[in-house]
Image (cartoon, rainbow, N blue to C red):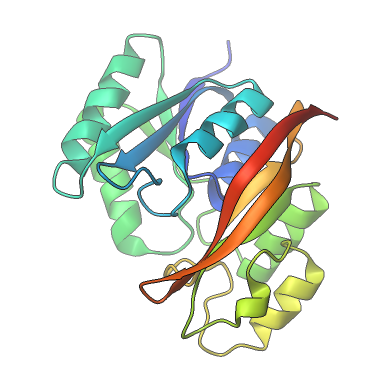
Length: 223
């Protein structure tokens, strides 16, 4: 039987691509787990509204668990959710980390304490190749937040494509995959998706030094 796993989910390219790679090697992704900061109504790290992550879950046909939390209770709440899923046969957790050692240490320690296997399909992959493979696989994703002092506003809402890679390669301040939070993405379509998310209305907002591409209206369409 296939190993049943849960994928940590933020709505962006890493969580989608990690999930895709896990499925490609025969793992069964039974659930998505998204941690939502209390009071923020936006996903813990990515500033994406929780209802948009529900739309992704619906488009992919994989149920999502959205757990409200705070930075202080993050680990406790995360563990609680994974323990619940263990009762449904979950044996591993997929993480989308690429190169931040302290993230990997956390993933491994917490998984060991829970008795599940930590899976990091993107670990130590070359950034450029990772983005190129993501594009080649047929994912559609857009830049939904960016740090105003590091990246040009014209990249807000930009599709993740080869032109985008070129822009970033020429920017010395930015880690290509945005792992330090320079930018975040939202995935609307791809090989995991049975349906696609069509964006109908979007507005640009500048807040606290970040540009947000705020998706106000969307619909889930057949492909």
